[in-house]
Length: 188
Image (tube, rainbow, N blue to C red; front, side, top):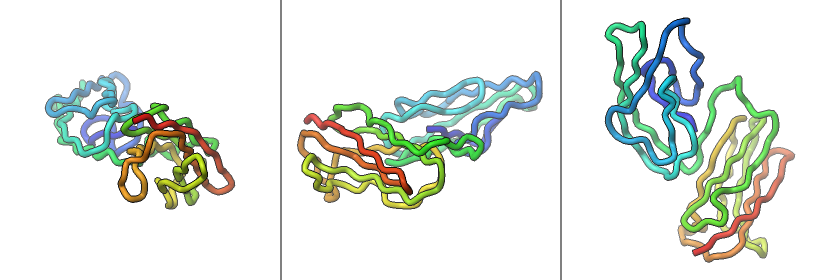
């Protein structure tokens, strides 16, 4: 997951730092509030990365300092919204070469699990969860998605919002000609 404010070297969610003029040093810090668990701040370019441990809305203030700006720093209030499905990279120069779904983690899991996937091209995407007998438990995604890298968090609940029982379940991704299944285990 990449997200960051518009102060300093990086502008717009999801872009990697392209660097500044030669000799310019950038330093970023969170000066109030807290980053969500699991996220990491690269102090040298202001990019917040990794996979969040929870979903929700988080507010923090980031201070970015560079060696050429007068005054020498800028502060920006940032509101980061982490949803059940979020784009990891939003940079058209860094699109995946293949469509793929990865093994969920943690696995086995109790309260929830994360599934990473990538699309090499825009497609109508279905990601669904099934029980061991093939009965549909939950449709996680049924919409058009652009090419890119994504994560999906599933809270272990069915279509009616009820927690499902311990056991073996399958998730399946369909996008264009691509279809793959993964096996996951819920332990309560």
